[in-house]
Length: 338
Image (tube, rainbow, N blue to C red):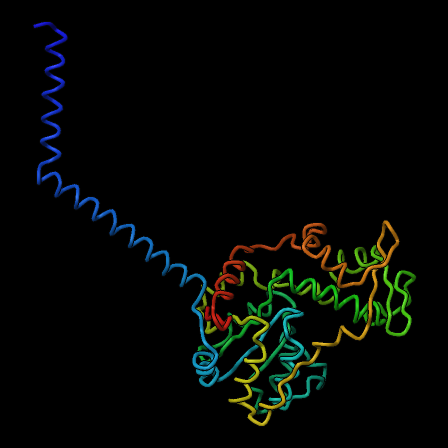
């Protein structure tokens, strides 16, 4: 027998032994248990991830049952929002519902943003309004609410996706401020020409004096409010806090009215919805000097404005806000308990 034949015989013998071992009941049982463990582990990790997502991004609520119950049990309700997120109509409604004049004393409109006005509010009356609605000017006011409100206080934050909010703010500042001669444009500008209800405005003016300077309503962005510090504070304080999509503001009004001012159920407010439609605005393009409608200009350049003029510089935790938005929009009622 040659050496080659001996080596071949050894290889065949080893192969037979290996096949017999792997075919044995003991090995098959062990392999089955390993696979079973692997499948169970994968299912557990998947379930844990789902639970983590639920914890991180909140729980979907309904208006008729969940929010109705939360409002009915709350001793105090704060409704807050950035600019151009249904705030004007909600504030107007809440002030009427609570029978509060928003211009009492030192202009109590959005008073929760300033400590001196809060102090004045606290001693204005024995019985203070159970529902307060206000725009937010930045993170500080929301941080104070998260840190200092009690277990029986309900915080409702009205949310609008930032690019949509910004473009609405740009249109509002151009139409209702620059073209209407209101602060900070309460003097004559050669770049803004108004004839009755028609306004012609230079593109260069829009860029340099409005967008780059983040005028008025543009400035109070979601990114300046929903900061990393705010998300950390939410984790630290576990508030009773609800995020609500701004298009659902009417449903919120109805619930507030049902519990605090039933006579207003037929008088829900829609203030400011048509405020920008009275003035017809044309934009004179910088290069061609031709005119286009403001709506056309915003549609053409809107998605690039934040990038082109670095409007989100310094804003952190955008990923958390986007994850929250995804969860909020996945809810049938666009209502999310954090």
